[in-house]
Length: 475
Figure 1 (cartoon, rainbow, N blue to C red):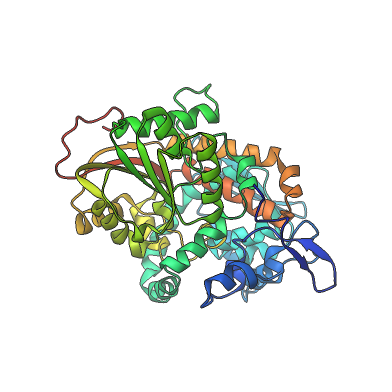
Figure 2 (cartoon, rainbow, N blue to C red):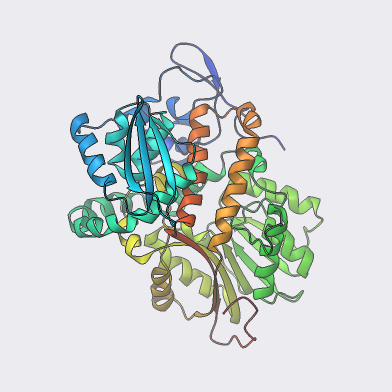
């Protein structure tokens, strides 16, 4: 299948050079405001700096520099960062700038020891802007760290103490932050743009990183010796068993991905699957894979927003899709899910969650993740999910399983695959800045799960008339 990405579009830089443009870039969210015309945002109005290709300008991206530039004097920024880092209680951080070492925290059993090499003093002002500033500083090469995942884990272990201050300051900043995020909320049109910014980067990129199932969600390693592929198959089997799928079932999946669950459920359990995505790249490859598996008569692929779905289904599955819904639409999402299920139906939700105390601080602010990686995204807390279920549905929780430890290894496998295939990544047209952002993203998530800042759960929900016995692994 031709790749609708790097090799199809060419761009001339201002000095006349030509470079290859990767597909829709998450970086464009930093460069432009939301347009009134979706097509122009997706195709025609992307800035060259945000979409640099294999032949990149020698100077850094103006868009990133513009955001990373700070009015905070360097001396004040350094002093402020030192004051914050002196609060390190779990683990140890060493800053190395021009051969000068400064140590914060102490070695501990539960915390990592991390060395940061500072190459540019603008790093300090960037650090004061949280994860967004850290991401931009790393993209620009203002610092390096050989253990990015451990750096993220160190932050995750120590952030709860900082959260107390952030919650205290929340009344001062929440209104403007919430107003800004409300303007960027996931309307159907904007949701398509947000999804395209990540999932339409190019199927070839994800092929290099994922296993043969093309599952882009937490695997479950039944035994330590299992491969990523075996762990993904085990996860898919577990989901199907929890739902007690049979050939008589018609299953709705919200969030197709590249068709991994639909193909597995239809081929291994004989059920019919209707699955939907709003990513054109995912839809195209999923259709190709369904045809290759000979499952066109069992799997129906839709390119449709969940809000527009109709029908009635025996079972419903959504695997790590709710994170893209947006906190303003949690009630709408669950209400729609409940309305699409038979009175005796069940739903399996696999979701990345954040601590309730951090949820209220994070949901309205810009972060590295919701700016560079998953525009418009928001991790729910378990309580936020429970509140939405109670307000908007008749669904009841009948089982939950925490699979967080498995995500640390899953992400490590993806990052190792990505780095091992880095020459192929470059051949696809992705530049050095993209490499650094993508590596940081994978390490950032790995450390977040490893430090307990975020978790991954499988939640089994049921309609009032559901009467089947509780499946295994759902206590």
